[in-house]
Structure formats: C-alpha cells, structure tokens
Length: 229
Image (cartoon, rainbow, N blue to C red; front, side, top):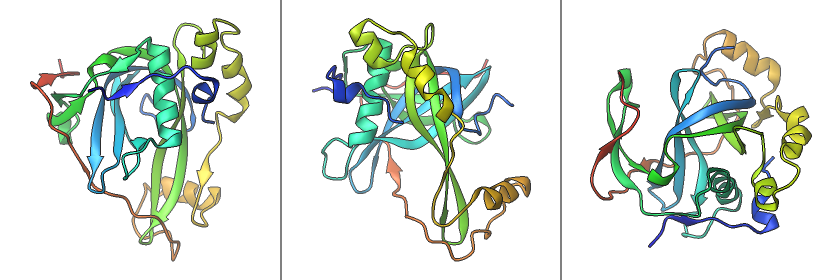
C-alpha cells in the first residue's frame, strides 16, 4: 500500500496558480524539514509542511488536501502535491511514519505522521495569503500555490519535459504578490486588522466556512525530525 503515486501527464503537472516567518504572498526558498499527514473527522486527508526559511522553522498548515471526505483525490491539492513529488524526484510515497516534530507551544514535541520520502528537501515554495471570516473573526491562511526546483526555478512539467527550466516561474512572477479576499473582506479591512495585531471580533457579520478537526493517523515506529539544537 502506498500513500501517493506521482503522475507525469500534462494536466497533473500544471501549476496551481521582511522576516523569515512567512506572512505575505510570494515565492520563497525553503527547506522542507518534514511534511506530515492528518485525517479530518470527516475522512479527508491533508498534508502540512514543517519548513525552514532563513533559519526560521515554521509550519504551513491545512491547505494541501490530498483526498476528499469520500476518499477520492482532491483535484487541486493532489495536483500541487504531485508537483512537489516530481520536483523532489520521488515516484511513490509509502505509509507515513510516526514521528515527533518540535511544533507545539514553545517548541514542544508533537506526535505527527511524517511522509519520510519528502524530508529535508530544498524547494522554492509559492504561497498566497487568503483572508476570510468565521463567526465574526477574520481568518488568515497561507495557501500553497506551487513548488519550483531550488537550483533553477524549474516547474514539475519542465522537469518531466527536460526543457525551458524557469519559464513557468517567470510567467507566474507577476502574480506572486496576489492576495485572496473572501466573505466580503477587502484589503483595507485586512490591513487595519493586521496593524491592530489581529484582534478578534473584527469581521462584522461576514460569514465563513467551518473547518474540520484533524487527527493524526498512526503508523510504524516513532522518529524525530527538526529537533532544536
């Protein structure tokens, strides 16, 4: 049994379109210390990324949904995850392994299910900030829009075709600063919220979608990644 198999067809390879802590839309050189999988209460599977950017370790949470609640592939998330596999040169990923990552409060260890084949990989990560509203509060999310190879900005499609390395990166560059605003929010409202240090209760009557709690699947022997020195 495998967690995921890489695809090389054209459709699967298309890109989904200050401080070291990532808090703005853009493309960033990062080291993926360890990606880890979780399963929601409704059955969907997502992959979160424990990364290092300029010696700042951090987690990109909750937006790479690989399967839907019914177990079928999530079209957007699976495509983006497939791009990462191609860029990393990984054809297939086995079941996750139980591991500890220092991602809890104050760097405390937390049990997770790591995708071992994709640990310690340098990539260019493109994220797009997304702002919405839920129960009167503004929400902030870092959406992974794609990956590029670290040494030459090559996309997954360019790697498979062995041609035009960096062309897709150059094509997308004008969109790197894009931000998504949902639920009636606008840039001015979000900027004021950030300037006020993200207080609660500032989204008015805007509606938002509810999330689902994630749970850690249990696999294999426990290992440790990204421990503090």
